Amino acid sequence: MTAQPDTDPSAAYKAMRRIFDEGFATGGTAVVDEVCSPDLVEHQFGLAGTGAEAIEHVKAAIANVHTLVPDAKITIEDSVESGDTIWVRVHVQGTATGPYFGPPSGRPIDITVIDIARVVEGRIVEHWGVPDRFAILAQTGALERLA
Image 1: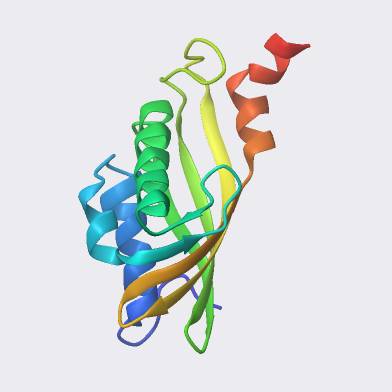
Image 2 (image 1 turned 180 degrees about the vertical axis):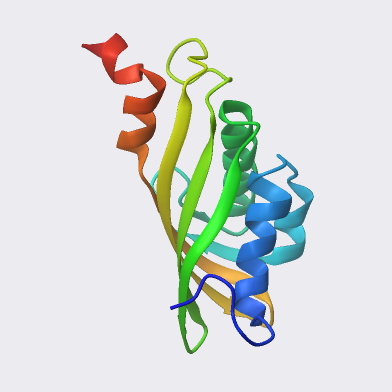
């Protein structure tokens, strides 16, 4: 496993890196059309869908994350590939200056996300994502408000 390949990064690694750098970190959604297949199959809870529906869900997720944590620093800490599939462990840090189940808390966010993607000819064709949503709820104070 490696965060930054010693050799030229694979097409799969480059695709994942672009989604994080040009999408989630900036709020830009145009990268989705460039990096994801128009026939994308999205499995992540809350984003699941296929084709145009999946593409729109990913764009909405980028906008939502960027609204919550506009200063997000996103680092791929580990990655492993087998065939056309890549697994990445991602570290996200920033400040919750946007609303999340209530008003902005201004609290720091520090979470892990596990992403698995099948990448064919440089485009993500299938994706599974597991963000630590419980950590987000706890760190933004949403759990305290619900208690």
